[in-house]
Image 1 (cartoon, rainbow, N blue to C red):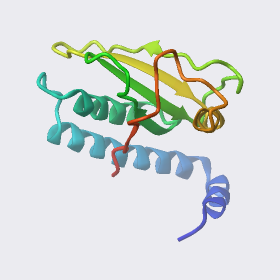
Image 2: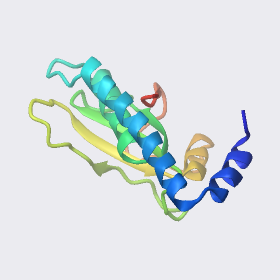
Image 3: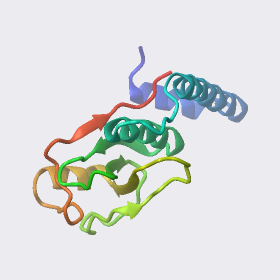
Image 4: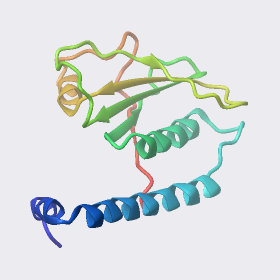
Length: 152
């Protein structure tokens, strides 16, 4: 299997049409995997908080191609609140900027949970883990659970 650098060079050499076709094909495979996951694991009103966090986190991977990791942070949160920390490789945020949680509540009937998402760069995530950058007020890393993406 070629290395990432080798694949990168091959992609650069592809004619524009072939590159476009390849991107479409990869996206189509990911969409199929997403639709299969959606059929296997639909949103249910009786989902636990952790199950909802997993359900919505996996959708965030699909929607935002810059997200490389999603973490559910249940510690110290109210029972009706889901907190996600998303590592986004494409985020353009000053490294020393405070980490802010945004109310990200989806318009989904019957969902009993409020959703808050904090987007961070990989460097900010490492600074958080190293105790050099604070999470939003009240957020804690203990009990952190990583959510796996949907894979084709």
